[in-house]
Amino acid sequence: PLSNDCFALPQGVAWTPVDQALAALRSGLHPIVETQHLPLLQSAGLVLAKDAVAERANPPHANSAVDGYGFLHAATGQGPQVLPLNKGRAAAGQAYCGAVSPGHAIRVLTGAMLPKGVDTVVLEEDCTITDAAIAFHGPLKQGSNARAMGEDVMIGDRLVAAGQRLRPPELALLASAGISTVSVYRRLRVAILSTGDELC
Picture 1 (tube, rainbow, N blue to C red):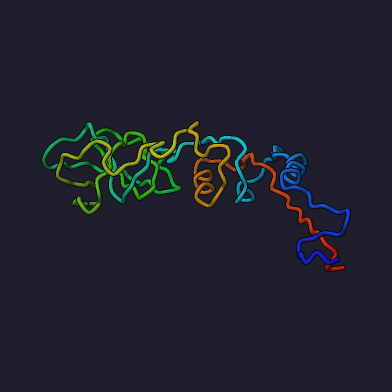
Picture 2: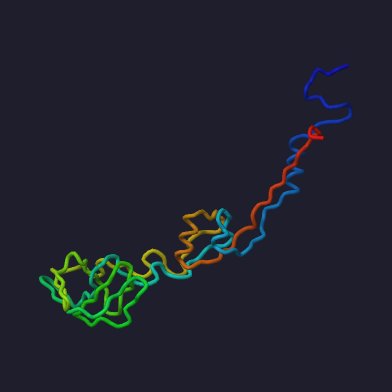
């Protein structure tokens, strides 16, 4: 007789209990522990297998946050300040090779590495400028308009912990700290198990 049951199986065939099916799946599945070293740009979306540690400071050197004039703070004081200008300038990517003597200033542009003898920058808008000197009203706070080396990240700082997925923000952070390759877990492989003979 018909069973009148849409879930009925042929005689002699039985459903596999859920607990047994899950146990069988678990016995065949294993966590992925295989790691690989990949270039940073090829690691998007993967999971970090080892803590990522900064290989360089960010900023890598003290630099100017503005266009202005750099000088040694200790050589200035309150009231009107007049500082003779060194020839040349410091620009991003074009470091000034010499040193700036105390009581002198040099033209610095945004992002420029601060030359030796410079720890403070005055905004160009706050200066009266001639070919030979600048004048401004002091005092300025030491370190004004300058970013210290490692202000964001120091060498050896842990940037991203193992187990974290590498998204664009993490990739940008790692690149800024000099990391070009990372240790990541192998990408997952997916298998589709199809049951039944409907396609046949």
